Amino acid sequence: MKIILLSVAAFWTPSAAFAPRANVHARRQIVLNAGTTDEFVVGVLGDLHIDPRKMEDYYTGREQWKNIFGSADTPNKALVSLGDLGESKSVRPEETSELFAGTTECHEIAAEYLRSFDVPYEVVGGNHDLEGIDEFDTDEANLEMFLEKHGKDAPQFIREIADKTLLVGMTSTVFRDAKYTSHEVTIDQEQIDWFEQVVKDHPSSEGWKIFVFTHAPPNGSGLRVLQENHVVNGCCWLNHSNEAQCRKFIELVREHRCIKAWFSGHFHLGQDYQDSISFPTIKPEDGPYPNRGSCVFVQTAVMRSGSSRDGRQQSRLIRGNKDGFEICTVDHQKDGEIRLDATITYSDCNHEVGVYAHGDIAGGKDLFKVYSPSAGDSLHPPDPNYIEYADEWIMDNPIDKDTKAWWRMACGRVLGMLNGMLIEYDKSTLAPLGLVVGSDELVGKRLAIIDSGADSGYCSVAEVSDEEGMEGSDCADAESQEQAVLLIDDKDNSVVVVQPNEDGSYWRKIVRNKMIRMKEVRREKAAKALAKVLGKDDTEVVSTYGPYTSTAGMAKNVVGGSKLKR
Image (cartoon, rainbow, N blue to C red; front, side):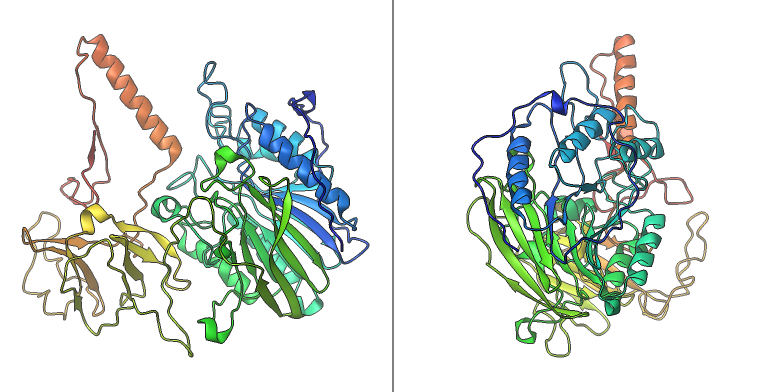
C-alpha cells in the first residue's frame, strides 16, 4: 500500500454545510461486508470536544484527513471517532448556561462533521456524550438521540473493514445514573456480553483479527495516565469503579488472541511518548511478560489545541493488511504529516512482533508518568520498591514525597506509596485504581501494617465494647488474616486507622455524580436566597453530608477531611 502526503493549501471555511440538520441519515444496519482486498486504512480521532465558535482546527484536520484517505490505494477505508464529541460548557454563555456536550445540537453538528470526511464513519460515546442534562431527564432518552443522530441501531458497532478483519466499538451509556463520578466511562453489561460473544465467534484460529475502539482504555493496558486527574478521580479505566467489570476486559484480551489492537482516547495526551502504545509482549531481557494477550493498546490524542493537555494536536492512522499493521501519527500542527510510530507483524494467528519506530520525542510539556508496580515473573524479581514482610511491617522513618514502596495485603489487595500519596493498585494488572490517602494526610507519618485478627494479640475477646448497639462485637467474626493499615504521627502520638471500604477495596470514590453535585449547589443557592429575603445577607451557608456509619447516627471522623463542607 502506498500513502502519499499532500500539502493542504487551504481548508474549508465555516459554511451552512455544518448547520444542524435533523434526520439527514436513515439508520444504518451494522456493517458486515468484506472488502475486496486485505489492505485497509482507518483514521482514528480522539476527543473532539467540538465548540462551534472554534472550528478552525477541525476544518484543518478534516482536510488533512481527506487528502490521506484520497491517496490510499484501497477501497477499504473508515473513520472512527472515540467520543466526547462536544465541549462540556456553554458555547453561548451570554444566552444560556446549558452545557453543549450531549445536546441534540451537539450531536447534529458532530454527525455532520464526521460525515464530511467522505468515508464511512463509526462513533463510540464517551463520558461527555450523554451530558445533555438540561434537555434530557434520563440517560436512556439522551442515548436514543445520540444513536439517531449518528445513524446507529445500537451503542456498539461492528464493521468488517477487510477480509476477516473487524472494527468493533462500545459506547459509555451511563451519566446521570453513575454511582460515583459521572466521568467514569461505563460500558453496560449488555454490551460486555455482546463483545464477549463477538470474540468467541471470531477466533484467531480461523484467521480473525479484531481492532477495538472505546473512549477510555481497559485496566491493564499499560498506557500513560495522569495521576492528578484520572487516577485520583477514579475514572482512568473502563468501568473503573466496578471491580469485576473493570477487570473483565483485560481477561477477555488475555483469553482471545483475535483481539489485535485496542484504541482509546479520554486522557487528552499526545502521541509523542513511547508508552502511548503498549505491546502485548516484550523481549525477556527487557523485563517481565506484560500478559496482554495479542493486543497492542494505543492512546489517541486530540485535534483541537484548546483540548490538549500537553500542546499536541494529533490523530491516529492504521494501515494494515494480511501480514500485520502500522500505527501512525497524523500531526495536525505539521500540515497533516504522517509519522510511523509502530509496526506490528503477525508471526502466526496467535502471536505478533511489535517494533517501536521511535522513543519519546522531546518538545512541548513533559508529563509525569504514573509509576506502576512490577510483580516480576519466573525470570525477573519484583521491582526494588516491593516490600515483602511476614506478619507485620512498621516503617522506621516518616513518609516524604520521595517515598516509593508497594506491598500486598493478606487479602490480596495491593497498596503503595508514590509522591506522598497512598494508592491502591489492581491486584491482577497492578494498574493504579485510585487515591487512598492524600499527601496532606500522609507525609510526615509512618505507616504500619499489623495483624488485627482475633488471634493477633492486639484484639482480645475479653475486651468487649460498651458502645450502644455494638456490645461485645470487638472481635466478632475476626479472621486470622485480617489486617489493619495505620498512620502513626510521632509528633502528637496519634494513630489513624485507614479503614477499607465495605467491599474490601481501599481507594476512595471521592468524586461524586455530577447531577447530585449540581442539585446540592442549587440547594445552597436557594438557602442563600432565603437568607437574603430574611435580611441576613451575611449568613454563611454550609452543607453537611452523610453517610452515618455508627448506630448512634453520628458521622465518624475519616481520613480525608470533615463531613462539613464550607
